[in-house]
Each structure stands twice: as structure tokens, then as C-alpha cells.
Length: 377
Image 1 (cartoon, one colour):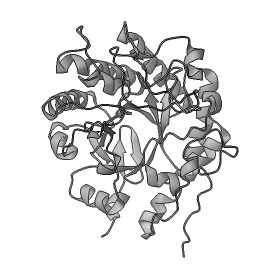
Image 2 (cartoon, rainbow, N blue to C red; image 1 turned 45 degrees about the vertical axis):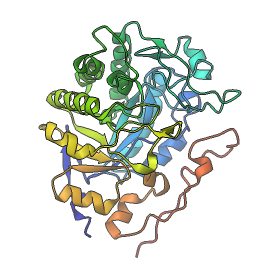
Image 3 (cartoon, rainbow, N blue to C red; image 1 turned 90 degrees about the horizontal axis):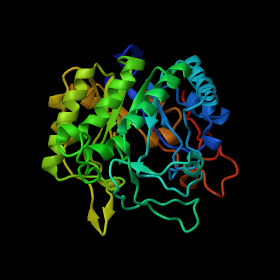
């Protein structure tokens, strides 16, 4: 079928996008010691044909993630590195949001960056997630029991401070990472948040943290703020019973929709990404689009999760969504948008060993900036 519906412009916040194909945040581990590089600039410029690029997750403070060499944004050197990248994307005709990321309990106290931070692994409650694999730590341990955050306002301030720096770096906007079992998701989910204060218990209290982060960041970026949400859960040991899931995300989306945001980046359930613990599926399977679209009155809705262009074009044409967010295929196809426009297949073979850097990596361009473009007449 025609994909023409994807090639109309759309305004998100203060920015006009040239098409409705968004590049998802994709962790690639090429920021040595957390600082953005020229190689990262080359990678993003290659993909500037997207209507919007969402950067890989940018840590708002030092954290011992599973991903060594994930980028940060807490000092002037970070700002300079990101400004170099954003300026390059802009010069190539693209637009770029920075994704602000705090991993919460999905960190490890023995990871190098966590040691440098000199603080514990923080989370809403002292409840460990199952899973995790810290390949750079001897024994490849999994997640640990975190320290309960004494004052969530401290973390909210870290998000706002990072937003201020993102503004200095020239990003067109920011997306909050509220999915995949990271800190905003951890506050929302009643399996990871057992607090009895104003930040836990009721739906309203569990939603408070994410909503306050949104409010803080919109004080910096106005309407150029988005949030990624994954109500189906699963990843990083997240997921509530369906009744609780529907109540929690319906309320959160309803309240967030009042904040004049740029868009919701809504991740649907994808069977091939199902997570199992003790052979039991962890996700809360439900139709994410049908469940939450009725609560979105003022905000663009972009759908994420194994979206193929033909399906995405139909969703846009039908008015179900305003745009689509593509992840993995953008890794392997720097000319993805041009391929969609010309009906070319996504046929590059993924270089799986080099999706992220590892202890055997010597050339960080491998599996990163070396994918070929299609031949065009």
C-alpha cells in the first residue's frame, strides 16, 4: 500500500517535522566516559532524514547502568559534545530531541560510573528487579536491592537541570524516558513502588513523580516536551495486573495531556519482545492504542513497537496516530526514510555483536556507521 500518509508535515510543539517517521531512542554505547563524540555525530547525521531523531537515552546524573559508555548531560563538556551533534543534525536538515534518562534501580553499585557518583543505587522502594546483566563487572551480576529515595524532589531537580543543559546544547525538545522499567516507570508501577507517603499507594500518588518531572521540564522547554510510556511493561521486571495498569496509565495520560506536550511516544505490546521470569510472561498484554487513545485530547500520539511503514501509514491515514516511531530498523538502515519513500526493503543484515560496544570492540564504527545505503535510480 502507499506510504504517502507518512510524508506529510506535522507540527509538534514549536517544531515542524518534514515527515511522520521518528527515530526512536537507541542505546549504542559509543560515548566514552559519558561524553559525546564525533563518531556519534556522524551516526546521527546519517539518519537526519527522519522527521525527528530522538537521541539515545541521556543520563541526567552518573549511574551504573548495564550500558557502559552511555552518554550523560550534567556538565559543560557534555553540553559542548551534544551541541556539536545537534548542530550537525540541523545542518543536515533534521530535528532532534534529547531523551532524558534515569535508570533508578536498573543500576549496580559496583559499576564504574556508580562508584564515581559516590551515591547508592536509588529507586522509589527498596525492591530489586529480577534480571539484569552487568557484563563489565566480574561475575556478570544482576540487579541489586536499591536504596529508597528519601526525597524524590532531588531526582526531579536532576531532570530539570539536565533539561536546562539540553536547551543550551540546542536540542529542539526533550523526551522523558518513562518506559522500560526506569525511574518514572518504577514510580508508576505498584510492584516496584510500595511507598506510603505522597509518592506511593494510590494511582494519583504513584503518578505524581512522573507528572512533576514533566512540569519541571516544561518550565524549561515549554511545549517541546514528550514522554515515552510502555503500559504493557515486562522489561526490567515491570507490569501490574490489567485492572491496575489501565487505571494507572489512564490517569497518568489524562493528567499529562493537560500539560501542552509535544507528543506521547506510546509503546505497544510486542510478542517477540516478551520477557519471562521463571518461564512466566511478565508483560501485561493489552491493546495499548485502543486503551489509551480516548484519554488523549490535546497531544500528538506516536506509536512505537515493531511498527512497519505500511502499517504505520495506515494508522496515520485512519487518524489512529499522528506518527510512528521506528527503532531497530534505524540502526541498520541510515537511509530508512528514503527507503520507505522509494519502496526499498529493509535488507541490511544486523551486526548483532556490535549493537553495543563490548570488551572485544576495537573499532566503534563497526555495526554503527558502516551500514550501506540502498541503490537508487
